[in-house]
Length: 318
Image 1 (cartoon, rainbow, N blue to C red):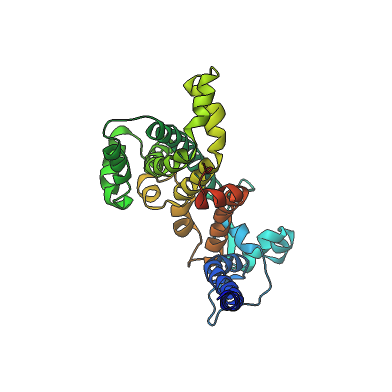
Image 2: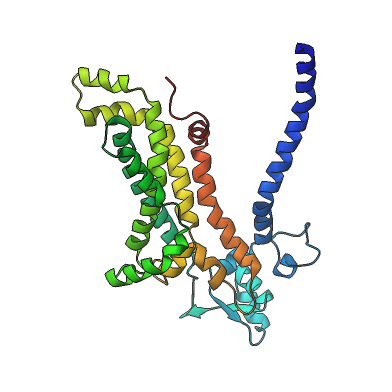
């Protein structure tokens, strides 16, 4: 039996590796396509059949960060030669860069990108912070109706967010929270809080109570034991919760589209609706999407070890 099992493992092991590689390539295909489109010339971005081999260029990123209009007439040779290389690329595409008093007019993409960073970061910190304290309370103390309270917290995630979009818009308009950073931060924190509570409670339950009891015997207060004993051991859970909460807030589209317009609008509703002049410029949209993916990828990469341990094993084992 052992020999048969060994032969089966030798057969299935390479097959499993091949299947994993295929699944990985399928998962990465959309990201690779977006990245390639961001560096394609506009003429080949939507060609049929698709162009796989091309000369990469950065014109799409220049378009992403500048305001442009269609050319009514071609610039003179003197004007074209005097323009910097990136502006010449815009001329080559049949557009010109808008200038005010000689200064290039920048697009709103940097502001929308910064808005996304502000809203996603602050809401993630608040949701994970409050979720950690709440989960600790549910894990360590006997609370009347605890199961009902936990179910109520979970029930806030049962409906699709878009279902409550209109009531939220009317309430936000009444309180003057539309098109504000604080409005989106409150909303994203509320939606991520239930997820943070449930995920962190699982990690808190994994931490032996004996560690805190020993600290209390040594003279620590409950808060000191929490910050010096429990919190360091819950780092894995906090990192995993932070990654998922950040991704949710970073990618949220519906509420950002409905509740914001200019000042606090984030990147997701801006990228598909505001980029391009004349016809839709898919290269500029792909460039904006590619840059938008980087913060989440970097954040997840930095916390990858915590995330892997958190998803598979929890905080620690008794």
